Amino acid sequence: MVKAFLMKTVVILFALLIVTSLITVFPAPVTAQSNSDAQKKAMYFIKNVLPVDLSKYAISFHSESIQDGTPISNDNRKVTSLQYQLTSEDSDLEVNFLIERNTIWSCYIYVKEGVVIPNKQYLGQFDAIQSFFEKYQTYTKIDSSDLLAMLDGVDLTKDSTITTENINLNIKNGYYMGKDYMSVKWTHTIGGVEYTSLELIFDAEGNLISVGDTRVLYSIGDTSVNVSFDEAVDIALDNLQFYSYEMHDGSIVKDFKVGGVTVALCSSPVDYVDCVLRPYYDVRLILEEPAPGSVFGITVFIWANTGEIIKFGNMASGGLNYVGDDGSVDVVVAQNRSTLIMGVVVIVVMAVMVTGVVVVKKRR
Image (cartoon, rainbow, N blue to C red; front, side, top):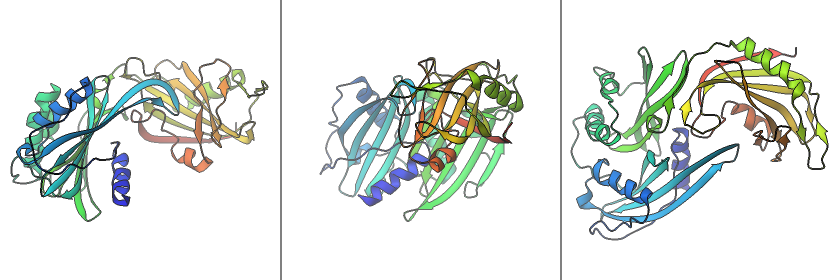
């Protein structure tokens, strides 16, 4: 149980979510139930994309659940989590899916016992990736030949970063719980801002561990950045005077004094309506002293192309939510300040991609 939990923690670092498992006993024909559209999609993926010898496994459906929205934003997301069990006499696998907007964007294979029985033997890591791409391109209907071409002549056993005009390729090797793994991630980057990505993780034998593909979930909209970091900070500070929030007793909190500022240029469908990625500034105004409700900072989200304020929000410790004066503010909550400040650029779970460029200013 502890091993399972630790493995799932690693998968979260790769932005891939894990769910718990079911045990079946002997190989038999595929018997997984297909009562929902999500289950049908998952079964199709298992049969047509998963690089596993299904003739050696019994397949059983375990669970389906839906996450409606996320704790830190009113995004109206509906993420379906599915889990299947693939069992043979020598191998026990747990296959987990995340489905959103009727699309599988995450699949993770957890080896509970034994080793994966592949549907072919690979000559090496590149052969394994190429073999997976052949089926995956057909499945997604997205031409990924340019991504595969970036791996030509690359030593996959060494960590490296390769950059083309709009694609960053990051290769990372690691070791966890007695096993070697390799991560290959392509990120669509424009003007230093990261948008959609495809990440594949394989073990040392070339067996697929996980695939995470936000290309199938999001499209890229207007990527122009007409507002500078400094201008974004000025907009946030100038408009802070118009922001307030209401306490549970009906009192209004306003007139904040800012002691510090952090700002990051990100891409995300902040309102999560059309799933179109656009650049915006995430400005965090750290208060000189905590305001009522343990609010230690105010967030201001600003479109990078127009300078228009998207919304305000609170950064609070202690797990309390407070509604802004416009009735539509998302309140960012953490159990302690360090937790939130370390994750300051995480706005929409599994959707936010950050440039890594942060500007810090003292009190103005």
